[in-house]
Amino acid sequence: MKKWVMEMGFVSSIFSISLVFISALISKNFSWENNYLSDIGAKQFGFIPYIFFTMGMITGGLLLSIYFIITIYEYKKHGGMVFSESLFLISSISMTMIAVFPEGSPDNLHYIFSFIFFFIFPVGMIFTGIIFYKYLKKFSQGTFMLASLAFLLDITILIRAEKASSEMLVSFIIFIWFLLFNYLMFKITNLEKKNENHEKK
Image (cartoon, helix red, strand yellow):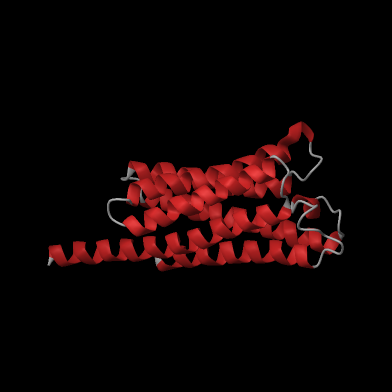
């Protein structure tokens, strides 16, 4: 993985989650218990919070999609990685679509893309944990724990027991895990390249 790819992963994820969090903070009367983050994207709390939310979701989703397209190409010889990265790509595209199709969109498109984003990414995390279990046992165990927590929070969203608070917690879990995964992949790729160059010499 090239350094600029890693940096794009960091910037896109930090940019996205920051704007979404800010959109909630500046939304007057927004409740973490009684509202969904998508309510901001439906312009229920004004135009400025809507802009912050929409920019975060669309721009972040597009940049992450590009990131995963690049990583799928880079790891094309590793079938397991291609599969898990493809799940992340689907989740990233869905992240963009959540904002493109806000609440009230026809055919429940907003809820379909929301479901895909919140559930598919943790599935990708589990597959990644399985792939790396032999080599990075602690990372994989931590991944399984975070993915399980994300699934539990997703269920609270589905049954409407919790709303924006669970959505944000799942987003933070994905955010923290992705930053660590992004950095690890950069280090592992560079180490493999150094070993290859050393063997050639």
